[in-house]
Length: 394
Figure 1 (cartoon, helix red, strand yellow):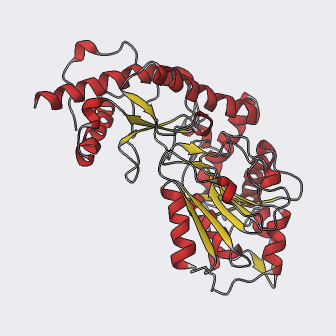
Figure 2 (cartoon, one colour):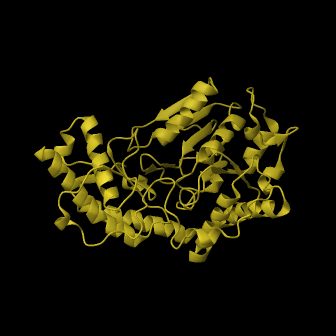
Figure 3 (cartoon, helix red, strand yellow):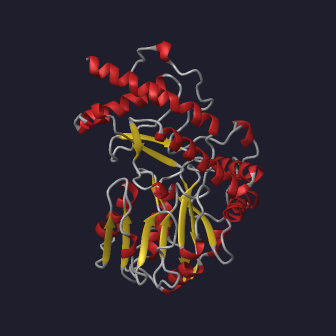
């Protein structure tokens, strides 16, 4: 770990909660284990009480997000990764697919479709970290697979205008770091996935899968040519297994995590619902943007302001000294900055994602208090100055 060298230069205030990790993310303000005392523990999740808890998560999530009538929502295994994989393996192959990738998770879905499912007519539209692909190239005749918000690049699509309202294909959207913090146009989407561990600050291992009527129609009219493992099967005898979307999960869920999800949903409702969640996240982004505008050593990784994420806020270091270092040394610097802030109890886990360009990644989702974000920013200046001074003197 990197040790501080100049305690006298410390900023005056520390964040009350140093949890700025991009997943699992900060628990909601005021959270404690006591909030989980009503958990359905030591009982079957298929018993009436357990199933009622699971259905409650589904119904309250649908209401909070404003999912349209006719959409199904279910709890599935393996976090957002399991949810998006389930969608890819169950729905793709009926028509050509456009795969959009501008960060690590989007690229992972490309790998699955191209190398695992081996779709012969998949088209990959890529962009480097910090940018979006040319969205005008997307075909309305194709299925579309994309992340609404690139968690590892801090780049989001600005809106859904680029998706045709008269599309023939399905849009499959990984929204894990967008759901509950960004306004999603459900009229342009057919499959939306997320997990509890991001904007809600919940626990990992459980994914959420939302399906439009068009997606359900695909499931009931098309059978993929590859075998599907049990945890990916959404139909029985060619019809949607409606029980999955009423609380009968495919495999055993953690009822402690379910109780935690309910706690987060209740908190979200109490503070004003989806508009309040979005407002909290956007306020955190605004605080960082104001600091970046006045700070010469740092810039957003996202090139265009309208594409900057309000949840996974990714920053590039543009200081001339840093830019003069080779990539390995740049990564060592950002790691040292992150470690120094952890030693000080100021910020945990804000080093950039391992596959991303060297930089910092700060979670600004709705569970992060604006005061904590304001308190963090002077510490970034301090920590970078400390590390630069140490390494320049070495």
